Amino acid sequence: MTVKSIPEENPSVTGAVINPAMPVSRVASVDVYRGFVMLLMMAEVISLSDISKALPESSFWRIMAFSQSHVEWSWLSLHDMIQPSFTFLVGVVLPYSIMSRRNKGASVRNLLLHTLKRSLILILLGIFLRSMNSEQTNFTFEDTLTQIGLGYTLLVVLALYSQRVQVIALVVVLVGYFLAFALYPLPGPEFDYAAAGVKVGWEHNFNGFAAHWNKNTNFAWAFDNWFMNLFPREREFRFNRGGYSTLSFIPTLGTMILGLLAGNVLNSQVAHARKMKFFIITGFVLIAFGILLHVTGINPVVKRIWTPAWTIFSGGICFLFLAFFFGIIDIADKKKWSFFLMVIGMNSIAAYCIADGGIRNVINESLYIHFGQNFDKGIGAYAPLFTGGLVLFIMWLILYWMYKKKIFIKI
Image 1 (spheres, one colour):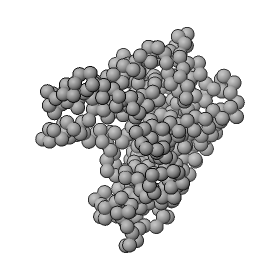
Image 2: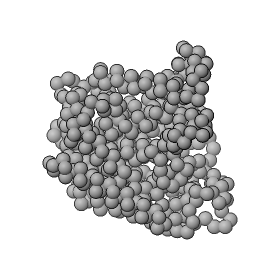
Image 3: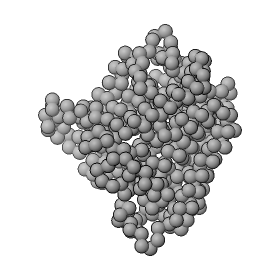
Image 4: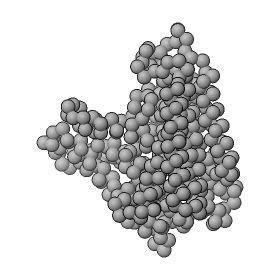
């Protein structure tokens, strides 16, 4: 990980300044899209579920709370789109990153060595953030950074080949992952569901063929029962409470490949209108295909184990998000409103660490230290909105200070 101070003589297309080591031409819409995604993550500090519980008759706050939570198993909420969007954008910017490095004379060997180092840093950073406030190192590989790190080197290798090879790789990844689950035997009548952290007859379980993708009774769960116990642990690993798994990095690579395909188009000389058409059509086709796989029972849409149907379905949504921001920011040139998001998006690693690390908690605790333990009690049900909003604004001010000082953290 490096901290770069960006010289002023290298302006980007957004009117900000960029590092010569960054892509020669930044796409403003990508920074804004990334900023939007990171804002959703940072805004977790505003506990909308607490407001909804305090106002149980309000359908508005119930919907808002749902949007900020993860679904129990199948389908999605807005919050479930944070990880696929962040992952998708890794692929989108890759053609620009490779082009920049190759233009500066980097050989393929140097490129791959840098990629391996980046992958390792992402994995270790993810483990570090997950280990904060733990008694020992929490070796876990299902969070966003480690999932990206596990597949990133393969993504870069694919980026060096033709788009045809990239599409073939996407198909192989998704079909192979599908078959691994489909061929893994379903639990028998003597299966101990309690030992796997699942209630017998859990209402979110699937029946029939789709049961191969049920929580903690699937191929990825079986793999983790072996793999996770290779690392030092306080107690034996038996299941992940949320059903998340290490092997999700494989279909997560599929999401990054979809982003790579989008980045190829974005980085091409094709007219903006044709790019928009491609993003929109591809988005709707992928969404329709993902829904078809789900409703037919061939493969359910489950984010927690990143089913192939989820890769396809969420990838389609990512294409539409990209089309939305590309249309407004880069085609219509409406950028002024997006400055708040731009500040976040241009320093996404810093934003991630602030939101997922201890800084957010330090800020929150400091408010009560300096203003008193009851400073927000008079606001009633809306206290989480007020206090969380203050913490969110302070986090943004940190990123704004870094933006003004031209300090950008990159890996």
